[in-house]
Image 1 (cartoon, one colour):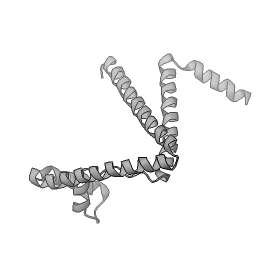
Image 2 (cartoon, rainbow, N blue to C red; image 1 turned 90 degrees about the vertical axis):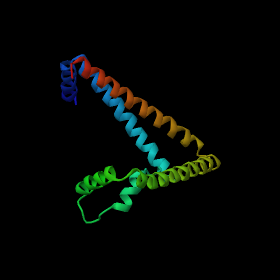
Image 3 (tube, rainbow, N blue to C red; image 1 turned 45 degrees about the vertical axis):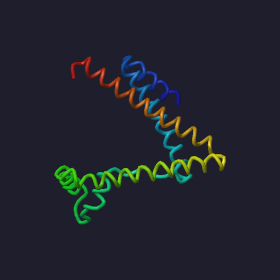
Image 4 (cartoon, rainbow, N blue to C red; image 1 turned 180 degrees about the vertical axis):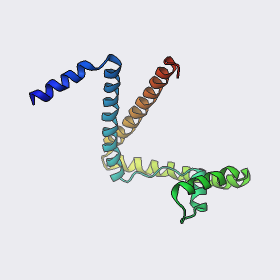
Length: 153
């Protein structure tokens, strides 16, 4: 145990300040992600409605060829979607808008149910956590971009 601690201290002393900061940010991000996953699992158990489908998702469901490899199928579907006239895309866009309305209605019902069953605390944590994780991700991307720009990348 003492030897491991000694090796760990030697390792830490060999790091420069940028590496230490990066390690700290990575650990913080991993901690938030782990915490977020646990919370999302609780929310899933409480049967939170799934997100609305996009127009492209509706198109893929209809145009899918089940006997193709997933990668090939994704390429073919993307090409078909790009080649699809705007008038035909609007059919899928309307379906996506309807699905978004359905989702919003279901979310209102679900949130009311959470409050009635005494799960409003989980609901608050969920939305706070989502906001925190998204902010951390945005911050890390911004910092990475700044580092790349300063290095001339």
